[in-house]
Image (cartoon, rainbow, N blue to C red):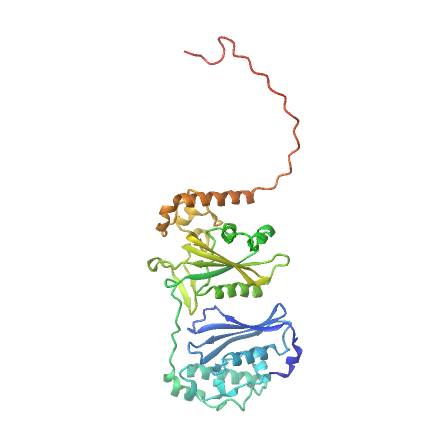
Length: 410
C-alpha cells in the first residue's frame, strides 16, 4: 500500500463490495467497491468482472473531496486485487488525475496488469486493439506531465503497439454474460421511505401482526407506486440497493429511513414489458405502468439493518409499477388509481392483466374500503376541539295545521 495510508483512521474504516448497476455496454457483471470512513462514503471503485471471474476491467476510481491524498485510492485498488486474486487486471486509459495517482501507486502484483504482459497471455479476455489504444493514451499522459508511470514494468513500453495488437485481435472471445429472465423467477425491488413517526414506530414493532404492518406500508406508499428501476434476483440484492441509496444520497437528519423490499410473482411471458437485463437484475424501460402481483414485503430500519420484518400475502396483492409520467398511464391504471398512485374507489376495476382476481371481488371491495377510509383520515386536517354547547330546551309539539291550509288532499 502507499506510504500515506497512515493518514486514514484505523477505527471506523470499512470496505463494501456490492453490485454496480450501470449499463455501459460491457456484458460483464458490474461490481462496486465502496470505502466507508465512519458513516461517510470516502470513495469507490467501479469495475466489470468477466463471467469466469478471471478478468477484471477497471471503469472508474473516485475519491471524494475531504478524503483525497490519504491513501484511500490505493486501499481500494489493493482490495480489488485481493478480491480477485487470480484475475487479469485491465486498468484502462487514465485521465490527468489518474496518471498522477498511478505514478505514485505501488502495484501489488504487476504480473497481473495486462499493460505489463504480452497479448498472447490475455488476448482471449480483452480486445488487444483497445488495450493498445489505452496504453498509448497513458504514455501520452506520462510524457505530457513528465511522469515515469512505472515505465520499467510496462511490457515493450513505447514501441509500435498497433502492430502487436493486430496480431492478437483475432484471439479475442467476447463474453456473453448470462442475464436475468424476469419471467422465470420472483423479482425483488427496493424503495427507501421516510414514514411519519407514528407509522414508523408501528411498522417496526415486532409485537404487532406482520400482515397488518405490511398492509399499512403498502397503503401509505400507494398500490400504484411500486418502483420502476432494478428488480433483482434476490432479496439481499434489493436491500443492497436501498443501502446504496442511503449512503450515496445521504440520510435525512431526524427522519429515520425504512428500506422496503417488494417480492413480485413472475409475470406471464406473453405480458412481459420491455426491459434491459443485467446479469442479476432487470430494469423495466416501458413508459406505461406495469400490473404486478406482490407476493410479500420485507422491511428494515436503516439504523437496524440486522432486524428484518417480513409478511407474505396469500393470495397475492394486485399492484402496479408506476408509469414514467402520468400521461403514460394506461386506461386500466387510470381506472384504478389516481395520479398519486392511490386507489380511486372500492369499485375500481381490476387490471385486465390479472383475471385471477375475478372471484375475489367482495374481499377486494372490503379491503379497498378500509384503505380509502384510512387515506381520507390522513388527509383530513386537524380541527380544534369544539366549544361545549349549552343544553337545548325541549321543543314543544307543533299544532296541527288549520283547516284549509297546508297540502290539498283529494
